[in-house]
Amino acid sequence: MADSPLLSIQGLQIKFPRTEGDFCAVDDVSLAINRGEILGLAGESGSGKSLTALAVTHLIPPPGQIIGGRVIFDGVDVASLAPADLLNLRGGRIGMIFQDPMSALNPTFTIGYQISEAYRLHTTATPAAARARTIEFLERVGIRDAPLRVDSYPHQLSGGMRQRVMIAMALICEPDLLIADEPTTALDTTVQVQILDLLREMREQLGLSILFISHDLAVVSELADRVAIIYAGNLMEILPAKSLANAACHPYSTGLLATLPTIEKRGRRLPVLEGMLEDADRERPGCPFAPRCPAAIGACSQEMPVLNQLSERHFAACHLIGGSL
Ligand SMILES: Nc1ncnc2c1ncn2[C@@H]1O[C@H](COP(=O)(O)OP(=O)(O)O)[C@@H](O)[C@H]1O
Ligand SMILES: [Mg+2]
Image (cartoon, protein in one colour):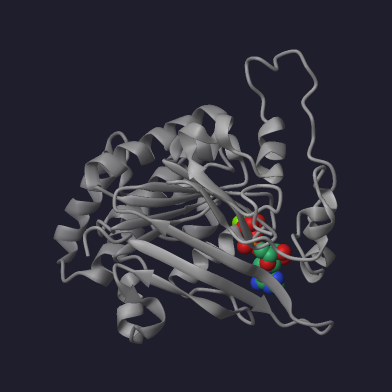
């Protein structure tokens, strides 16, 4: 089992019933995360990143439903888990952090209480042992004066410190997988860099795998080992982060890359990716990116291309690449 991926999402489909017809929010997403790997998931807002993350622990908000595909975690189909085992997975073997720590933390309890609760829920630790471990984890995530800070309330901390608290809470049970959904989006750039460094360090220390999600491809490629690019609920391209700049070839990926500032582009106006993701683009046959794609050909509006393997660790779903027709 050690060689198999820690997490494998296969052909995931999620729909929301709407009066005007079902809305397919995630159409076809397949991903695997190896042990100790950081997989980045990037794509514009509304592309299905958060829902994909929530599907891992079956937390899709109703009336949303998983209507196809499977999630296999450490060799076990998550759909087959008994309710108690699913609860143990959430926060136990899989830790989660989200964009806005203020809404995830309860303002009326100390951070120490909230972190140790997460620990006590999944272990038989005594309150004293849970408090000691909470202080240890606050130190690990870089909170100074942890024995004093443990009794602070969320509003007494800065945004960056609150996000560190969330990371401590997600990691206190030493999960195998951390799902971090836009964990740095609400933070200043300098704090963002510190949080990315912290996640890297935690991966080393705890041997974690991380699913790191951001709408910002630059942030994702900075941290991840491999990058998956998603559009309108479909996986468009997946490749090693270090070859992203040179080898990415899907027109959506290259379009996103062109919008990123680099030293070479300094002083020049950055291009924008024309158009936006429209709900109607999901309903039409073919590739949902076709209406915005500068390279689209006839086939693109007729049939969704399959994900083609271009090299050992590089896949792309485009009629113009790898000859899927
Ligand atoms: N609770 C919900 N009810 C209805 N539609 C939703 C809900 N959550 C997400 N969606 C829709 O599903 C699509 C994907 O959402 P999401 O996964 O949150 O995107 P992302 O995280 O990439 O911005 C969006 O178009 C969004 O409007
Ligand atoms: Mg999201």
